[in-house]
Image (cartoon, rainbow, N blue to C red; front, side, top):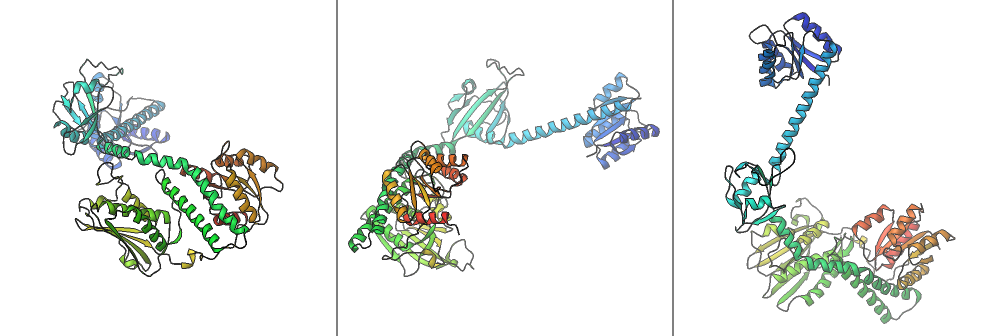
Length: 626
């Protein structure tokens, strides 16, 4: 933007010459004033970036008086023009803080350099004022309390936080002399290198961290024996200490989670080998007696239950992503009832109520079971002397769902968990879904159970409602969207065995260090009309890929293996620009590793123990995309 300049000069010829010069130099002259009064009017009208002011003007105001008025009214920057440079005039001019001083007559280059220097000073000064304003806002809004003490230890300046904290700590206010904060003298705090923790004797107690430092001299040296200004910084760490205590209370749970993550791979390998055997037997044997089929099905079911237990253990160590698929709530509730019969004391009566209706939904069965177990556990703790626990299943309309529009035409499934226990106090009720909030004694609860319930319900697109009365019990009502398309459930009849997904003699490289799983998977793939190459780690896999004839169509690799695991194998394949598709399976994978695998173009990830039908379906989708 072109710089705007106002000329204040009572000699018209000089003013016009000055205007011509400035225009030639690329500036924009917004006006010419012949008197101080006219200059004030034009300055208010045009707000120029710079005013060139002749010191000697005709009229009531001379140039210096006019400049002073402009500074007071508009904070307008001034450069003086004059043919008189006597000492007295200079001293008067200094009082108005001009940005330059040109003595007539002057050359055009002198004019240019003086104007540019003035503009530079103006820009720099405005930048400094902006920084100062930002600093002031920062001090005002800083979350810590900041106070300045003079050499007599008197409070001379504070922000709002410091005022509040000083009143709480020692009933101090601006102007007070600080001698002690808590059990420490100010001198002890001043000589301590770091933060001191101070706890109040109020109920409940508040915990602060305090740091006192001396204001340094220009040379950066501080002599603690010389009285000087002090900066007092105070932090309220009450909430941080409460969180720290809660985290420490979770140490045993975290240890369980870490242990589970560490053993998950080995346990899932065992389960994977067990689960593959019934599939192989059923495919190899044309006819089996019903008792044998029942035994094989029982083996599969027990292995699957073991796999689900491993997944539940892993929930302690990481936030599992939901595995959403259609399922029926009725079998899940019956399984829950069996589990609760073993977990609930004899003094609590479990009453399960399910109406004759369709209760299929799209969700994660394991997480749904977990949220119901959490609610049942809370109900048990609320009935230490016994009572009744009701779990009810009902199909309802959208009008019954809280926080939904009355016009919602969809059907919903309501799961109601009701106990006859102690109830929840009305003051506590609004906070029960907050993380780490618990009313139980130390060591008796994590404060995460109901927060986890709330999160699972939200991830399923549902709603949760609660009602409670002291001494009469608590009711949780969970509303989940019902599955509209019954066919999408895709359930199999007990007698039906699905038609296997068959290959077309494609070459699959199986990378697995466990001989039992490797042998079983190879047999499954060969029964499904695939050609199988085997490798015990990533290095061996790379050699097989380089020499395979015909070439490898798909790599099916475990994640955790000695020498070179699945992640490293994928990285090396991409580095060598080998674009064979890769499908990874593992008993456990972290979110960060899963993200790396996706970034490397891994086509899919399957959990161990691998579901054979799902594995064959994924392989077919990769090799024969629709």
